[in-house]
Image (cartoon, rainbow, N blue to C red; front, side):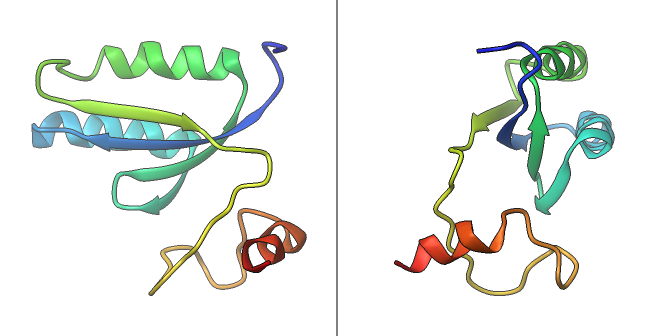
Length: 103
């Protein structure tokens, strides 16, 4: 895979210490879109991922904290129930991709 090719990713974290949580939240919020508390959508390259991972490693305690970054498929299958944290009208995926969820 090309190092500059951007992929869709899901970033999730569980940070034990409030001080570290604030640091991780500020960092991730600069790069990704908040979907739920501690869950973010990110469209980024391998190079950007490596940079973010280095920055996150410096802010966590690996014995207590958990950060996971999942690649999302090109056409994700998503179901949403309840209230969205996204502003009304904002979609992460195009209408055609969303329609495929219900087929």
